[in-house]
Image (cartoon, rainbow, N blue to C red; front, side, top):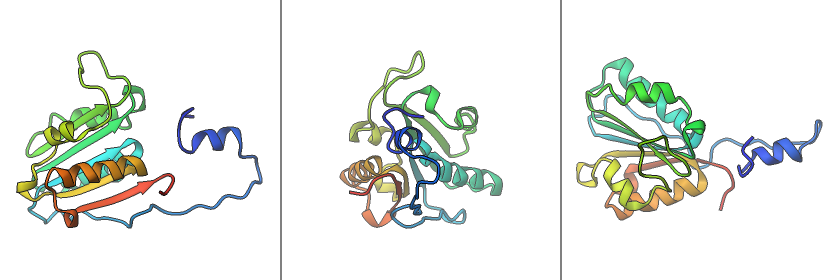
Length: 170
């Protein structure tokens, strides 16, 4: 349980067996990456938002696609990084694939950048807007909205930004 999480304190401390729940799918519509698309792809994940984006990376690897792809994962600490070993391995693959992890609270020794993903840091990590990448953003609502704003301020076309979000709606 994450003490300051959006859902887990409620599930662990308030919800009782037999209480009704309403479950809904992701907010913002679904997105699909086409491995035949030659445009670069920029994938931005907040926390467990890495799950569908990592599926895209795995598909790229499985079909031998060569279009450039960058995956940026934002998480609180090394302990909360999902698929850490796989991401570490993928960061060494090369072949047009880049993988970066940004920690917001605590980083491993030697990692000097800690904090939320601001527009300056994002600009260093993503494919430049002039290369017209397809951008896929997945994570908590606040992360997704801030990241989209940053991408647009960096010159990315809103029509090329696809989003999946979870958590509370604004």
